[in-house]
Length: 640
Image 1 (spheres, rainbow, N blue to C red):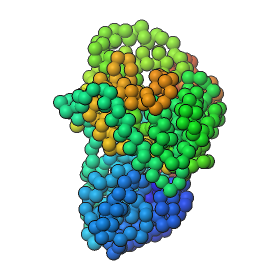
Image 2 (cartoon, rainbow, N blue to C red):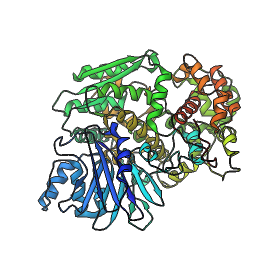
Image 3 (cartoon, rainbow, N blue to C red):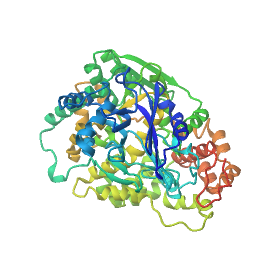
Image 4 (cartoon, rainbow, N blue to C red):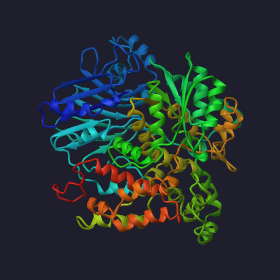
């Protein structure tokens, strides 16, 4: 695991070494164990290393034998030993046992097709000095991040946006489309970043650059659900056994490490299954890490403890009563752009706990999206039959009082009746939407006044484009695929990466192994959601491995009591951060609309905690970044 960065000087002159060193310094938390930098002609590559495999000889950058190929990598290649043996048999000579050196030799052997041979999570930068080509590539599910900025004089890239922001002359003008997308999703989806001058390399994509040419971005991998006619039809018992063994094989691969590996154990089905398999497959006693809150509905320590005791793990747990205001500000600084998934707070805390004992941990991201774990999937299937009738209930449901409980009945009922009558994709989005289009328009009126009318932009078009790619698959599978391509990659995996790397902890995600995902993509809807039960087949696969109370438990989710906090202890903080004076000075949102959202939540009329968390996160991010400004605003109008 590492942080990588680099510059390709487009004018042909050598890159600015000092600029690359500055970029690398911003990534020290991603790799505190060693640093490396090389300049070859117009390209500079740098890496900060968190030593996990081949502790003595695995520093980066690495080279092919003739030094024609130079590589830096953020991630882990779980089949690197197998590839090492194969390449060695073909005559390649290695200087290390590390997985990054395998990339140089494999590219030398197979060219760009080498990416399809990799089992792992990765963001790769490879300079082929013979062909004069720089190649950037990201793994199929986007587990590891990669940002880039293409300017007239340079192409720069990095594992985190902060490294690009540190470059001299980087423009901090906010992209209005990214801002509206943030208000829609509570995160900024690829390929956008909050800055117009920088982009995210999308999951499963590569970027090619040659001196004197414009960079070209292309998709190289696209995991997708099968067409309805090609789904698995075997009996459920056999499918459950196969799933269990595929996950066992994935966990075994994800345990490859020269340092101890732990498990982030929330107590839910996904992490409990991974903990059970890791404990069975590891030669060492596995460490597990859990946190909980005083509020009972947000606490799964009891279930996590059952799994830990069954497998005799070295279990560490912590009940937290965090200083919410302090942590929100601390966490906002880790993301480099607005990010408002409140579950980042428990992820940050459990990562801090784990990092005090291990350098690597396994986590359950991807299980819900692949195997049907969200309430929205159940709502999607119900709405197919009851959508028009549900619309008639809206006046009654809208009068239900708001509750502070997690995923309360009133919250889910209101979401359902507002969207159930819409077409499938719009309905699915409506169940989760943060700010609706009309409210976004009101909020952004202040910023849009800076430079006149903006072009028409609908963030939901990003979802529609993804949805259109899977025509012919089961309806639910198409909606799951939208979540995999947007929510998982641009929210959950961003959260996991930043919160863990803030503590120099590598987190691995076995559910996103290609063998597991390919199996999930072949399942029919009845194997994912059946009746009122979600993750139907996964529950049967996990049943022999964990206590009955765990695999039969209702999904609680890894979240915090945000609604209660924003009606209680965090109210003074929220009023300060979202005061009319501050919002007006920032120049992005209409203060009256912000105030209306705040008061509607605090009064208990409606649960608007996700909207408030987003507004707070944006303001805190903005306050920590000197020089950000609305599109069209003069550079002198620095916002603080």
